[in-house]
Image 1 (cartoon, helix red, strand yellow):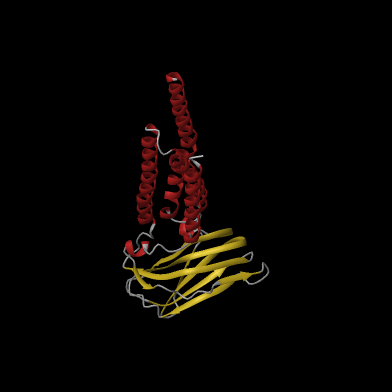
Image 2 (cartoon, rainbow, N blue to C red):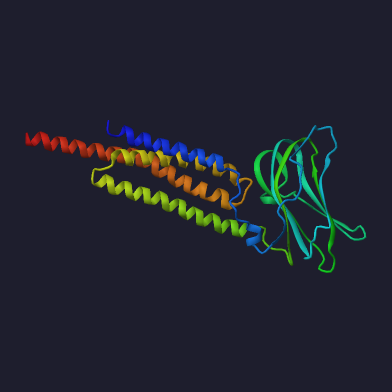
Length: 282
């Protein structure tokens, strides 16, 4: 009877945390990995349509936006943002044309096999995309044209598109995202380790049974959710989003899953010893 309220409390905490995670999914963290990599932000709001939805028999190339006189003063620029797509037929991709004075044109396309320049296929939740271009140091673009190529139709949504420039081609956030992901992973593992240490300390003294068992249940639940979510994000986002979820989730799941029966048995054995000692004294 003593364990009902603490375990219920921890289940409530678990539900609240899961709700907060779900609400915060896809929101910006406030940091800009491109700026941290040395890129200069020229526009934090490139005008894009909310979504494009085409039948398979319609035109394959869809104009998204044109940026006249983008104000680029460096030899290298990129457009970065996020897309979400459903039921795409074939290999779809984003395309950026960099246009110079006199009509000279060069293109960049997201036709890679992985990362933010990965082609668009099938269905995907929000994922990062980037269109970089390294041009001439003597000439400046007069226009940027962004298109979407849908060879088999489908629906694509757009958000958070920005324009950056740099004097030379720089990393597109991967190294910084990996470092940030490692830091967050260390924090997640540390928090779980502290919970485990506290549980072991309480269990060794025979105290806090409800608290300890509830904490193990919470860790197991959050661990499973984090592992699943991290696995989904790993295919289409940067390491700072999925690495803490995968590693921290796995650790939390193992600690909670193994810890619950272990600590429950430890408390039970301690109670049996106390009962045996009491009977012996009687």
